[in-house]
Length: 472
Image (cartoon, rainbow, N blue to C red; front, side):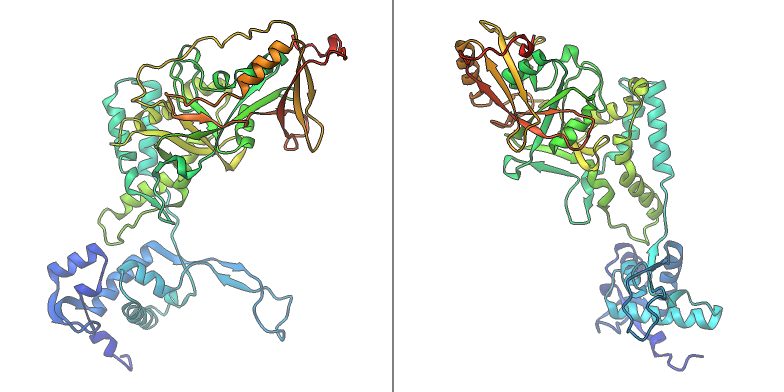
């Protein structure tokens, strides 16, 4: 017998326990008695019985943390060369409070009972550790359901499939219930005041194409016309969307431009509120699940699947497999635009080419934008005479791409045109930022390429550049 059995006689009531499932169980089967911890007469259970319930959950879902090398914090009398280790995880009292959702006094008493019983009955030291971590949990059921969905849409029914919708509902319909560890929502409303910067890029291999983009940036940099829109990670062929990134380096890297080419990028801002799903936040997703919930393992399985799901969206796909392997994520994107009361207009996901620290974004067309106005062919360049282009893209610190016109009328016309206020795209609600166009020469020294500003120059009548600078 223990020397001090007073702890075993303690009684805890329903009001001192905040876990919803445990509280309900106490209400249904507890006895009315004076609570040791709050003094109220209420339904409750003995602390010894509660400790046995906690012991089952603790050993099922937690394990002692690993010992890892750490910086020394011992005095100089110790051998400085001797390794110093700390144990990963949280203390047992913290974990018990996490399980029962009660104050520290109750957790301390439960731990004292568990330690004594472990020593007396088994002689083990499970509760004598410094840190405990949640046991690794791999999603099985939700992962299998996603794989079933992928097979179904790729090889069985691609369109108007009720089975596909049922599977997607089970996997993603509760997106709105989740938040990250810092309280941020996965789906959030973004406005112009948030200052979100969006960058889009286009590759240009010929000087004439480069000039066409520079002189008609709002037409050339927007999403492609639907008739020529190719399939992408989040859109099927024929449905045009706006692929971009949240920094210039990412939007350039995603194009995978060859050495010797040039990439033109521009910045955009949002002009009206839009609902954005941030898939990069999935790994930090948090959801309180009671350890006493009969569906704990099912909910935990679902949570672990969602935490790893973003890798399904951003994983690399070989070019010859794009047509079939993009289908599941295309259907997923379409589902998101219709599955929620507030339609999702954009998805943020990690960059495949630039790395997980960089983020891509895809913006869908607004459903209330009316008839879509888009031209199949870009506007021709109505130059009255030959133009000249001189690249100064390698000079630092004032690197520029300078375009010199042979005819002053062309210079005046296009100089005025490039200074016109940007127009808001009715289909996406995006607007190009003035003076944000940049050109980047792609060299063998990847990562060292710099963005160049663009300068239009009037003709120099006293100079003859010669045919070597002609762009067409």
